[in-house]
Structure formats: structure tokens, C-alpha cells
Image 1 (cartoon, rainbow, N blue to C red):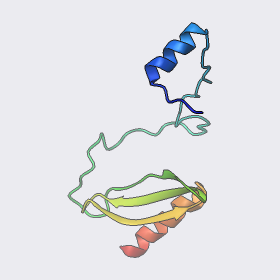
Image 2: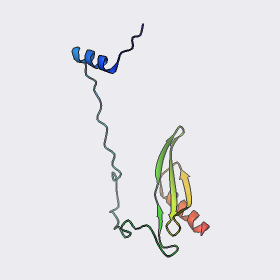
Image 3: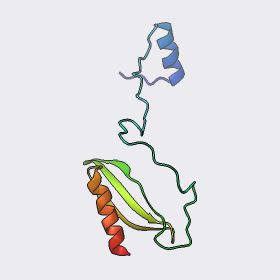
Image 4: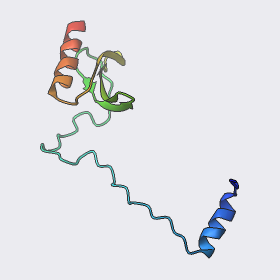
Length: 109
């Protein structure tokens, strides 16, 4: 027979019996771990608008976990029109991901 207890009752019983749940400490996420190149200077100073075409292009990669594994999405943002120029998805985050997105961006212009 299974009894359903409230969280407070379970906590009280665990306290009375000196039962403690041990949690493993989660490793803190660091996007800079394993960085092999120095940080580049910030030329834009958070000003992502431009009055001239082909002056500023931005890209980044985002990791998604799906049932098949990890995939990486990399969009190319064309700041002149504030639009996504092109994008690519790959299962590896490597130089081919960046090269493909730049090739796609050049082809659409």
C-alpha cells in the first residue's frame, strides 16, 4: 500500500530520522572554458545598427538538445535591414559551421 505524504510531513519525518539528501554539486557553466584565442576588442559598443549596406554582419551559434543528440544553429544577421540573412544547422560546432553560414550569406547578397 502506497501512502501519499505532503512535502512538509516528509520533511518532518526525514528530520526526525536524521535522513539527509546529498546533492552532487553541479559544475558552474563557463562559456570561456578551453578558450585558446584572446578576446577581440568590441568595435561596435553594442550599436548594432548601420546606415550602409554590408557594413555589419553578426553570427552566433546556439546549442539545442533533441532526442537524436545535440545540434547547433547558426544564424547570420544582416544589421542593415535587421533581418536574418541565412542560417545553418549542423551536428558539430566547428569551422565548417561558420564557413557554411558565411558562404550562404554571400550567396544571398
